[in-house]
Amino acid sequence: MEQKREIRYFAAIQLLMSGAGSFWAYSTNFFRESGFSGSQIGLINAICTFVAMLILPAAGILCDKMGTPRRVLFLSMLLEVFPCAALAVFGVFSWVPYVLCVLMTMLVVIAQRISGVSMNSWAGGELSRMGVSFGNVMYAGSAGYILCSVLGSVLIGRVLPVWSCFLLQTAAILPMLLIIRSHRGDAYEAPAQAAVKKASGLLRLVLKNYYFLCYLMLHMAFGLFLGIIGLDLSYLVEQVGAPLSAVGIVGSCRAGTEVVVMVLMSRRRRLPPYWVLLTVSGVLIALEHLLYPFADNVFHLCLITVFCSGLSGGFFYGLGTSYTFQIVDHRAGGTAMSVLGLANAIVGVLGSGLGGMIIDRFGVLTLTTSVGILAMLLTLLFLLSCILGRFVLKKPYVSET
Image 1 (cartoon, one colour):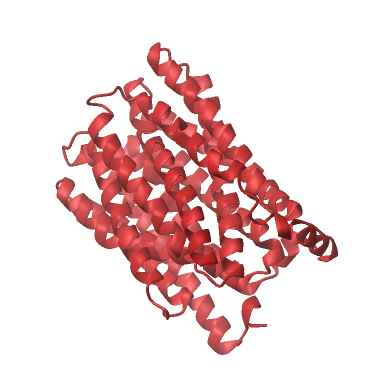
Image 2 (cartoon, rainbow, N blue to C red):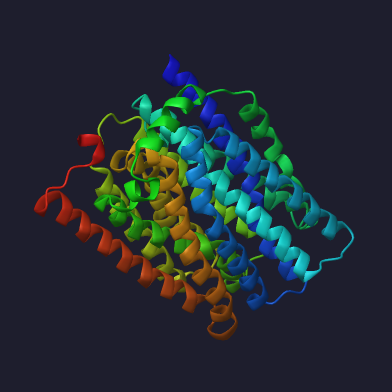
């Protein structure tokens, strides 16, 4: 009974967070309508991702030092609301200064990255103590993303102006109300602080872990995908001659498949080893980008996102956090999540910064093909390193010792 109550609570927060965050996908449309070029938009994403990269490790260590990431999550979501409101004001008055847009976007991206790390650390740690997979919560996030993506595709650019995406994103206030009233995880705060003081170092606990370093390679493949998806999706939709409002439709198809996959996994008592399913996930994300040149219409884009990105995201988001807590020391869970976020940020800088220039000079399909090849290489490295660790070196997971 307690497990079900905890799952429902964290699922509600995840649903509201993902729903509000889904409207950020329309920020590229807003910047394009404001007259920014692909290179300028790519530069915005690169700068913001780089700054977030510098802050993430400190955020993860802070979560572990405090013993509970709940307070960090609340503050990061509060940081997200105010710049979104400012960007909406820019849109209302048709005054979109480039420097201020960079600053506001930077704050939003930083807040979103910290929120993701602290939410995964908080919910993942709490559920792992009860032996529950984080996938039982993640599907609610995809469901929220679907509902709000459909809502956005109907309203934004048709009924409402494009800048309304920022106003809708301020709905992040709703999960904050659930977070501030909770004390989950606080009982572990003092013991966790004492344990951390006795540890040889949070970063050392993470970076000396063989399987974590292996997983880091796969996570970089997904970081590359996440770094450019907001940049290239609107160009892909335009490439097939569809209106920009179709961005929400394609995104909802991906999220819908993720929900189905995560729900099915949560109902199975036994699954193949996590590293096997995560490898499949990486291969699918690579195939998605390699197949984009063959898409001729929105229907083709939806098929690719359903059978590649959707299945891949279902495995990755449903199992990634649980796998992390399976292979690393729980005392350094927040630090591990922040290091993974740092890897995402590094490849995100490359994806966003170079992505905009590649689109301007060579076209969006050249970008997607390059990403697909790099993602496939990183996935193969992850697979080979896991096989070496499990069957040749016979290294155990932390949870097995």
